[in-house]
Length: 337
Image (cartoon, rainbow, N blue to C red; front, top):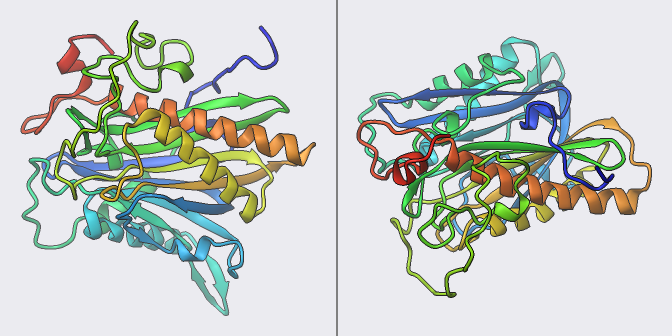
């Protein structure tokens, strides 16, 4: 096997980046949930926003010229604007554990977050008190190296064009000894499938048979310009890419920007006016760059590949549930996962 052959980490999850933990919490009656990425110590984080309708918390803080350069956790959630409260639950849990940015004798956990729209997906949205704060805290309590994909966490109620969405993750080993991973909640206006499927646009980047091993169809469909396939304000794909390479916040931002290419390869179309598409980037800083130029080039490319694969895995792993407005991939194509 050549040195450039792509290999996953042992779990094929973002938590193959040593030190990272992911937790999910969901309410299947609600058809929604939250996902948190955290670690035992703060980590460098940045963000790239390319969708036209983002819903975010504390993303301005992630610009390279801001005072705070590290965060304690990142939260992805369903629930549209209500879901931003998931980060408050995460912050509550972190503060109780003594975590956070020190200000005098106080600790202020730094928890950026992003949300997707899943309010019209058939779930019961008749809550009296916003449920997302509790979901966020429960996701933090569940944080571990292994976690569920598909109909889990922030991907619980996600949908795409013609098929159910979900929570996806993937990892890759990068020449030089680095690891890169991706975590994504796929709720796109566009489609992850080539034509009517079952093949995925992400197929050229698949490692093994992680989302079916079908490759691309023998003949690609003719280019077209379809209108929105679901409600024009019911979308957003939110993601995190991570590495153990030691990056500055500016370098992490470049990795997030590069990873946006992976979203565009896996979802057609992406970054629309009606999506809130964004990518966070995380660096744990465990391994120094040996050759900054070439290493950063490889890390960006690996992040894009990982995000494409994670998107397809999230859709491929989705499970059916009562009241779903769309079939999952398995139902639609009758193939085992």
